[in-house]
Length: 185
Image: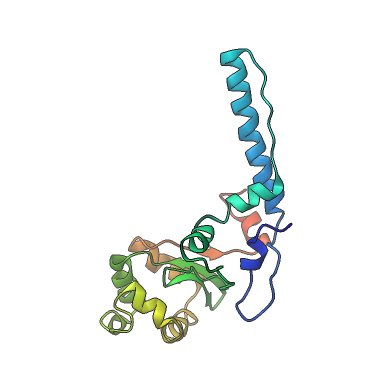
């Protein structure tokens, strides 16, 4: 059976979509590697062999992390939210003039810095957006304000501004862009 990851992947108003790569195979391979290394260590210490059992399903269920916690604490299954984070706003991908960018504003200090460097400081004191719970509740209105600004800037302009104030940010590269990136080369 499918691990639940596909049910979480996609836009809220559409059906599930598969992840863009073979994540189950990769994660399971990494767990197998860990299991083999630990078995070799145990054999070295005890002289006895070990049995290593790895499951694609178990490996993928382990990647549900906070999504599983949401279900286990509330009894409600999380739903597809596109690129949004279920409990932090703004924490998602946004459209820039030259592609998409991920931004993660994870605390109040970052929120104030985000508003200032993106040049909408009036949003900082708006009671609809003055706390993370309020930003979650008023997400639709906030998204409109953020989108209006970010769509006028390039990914590098946004990255430069937000990196300067310690906000996690990064472009969503195409496969070609990442393979041509100097760090990857």
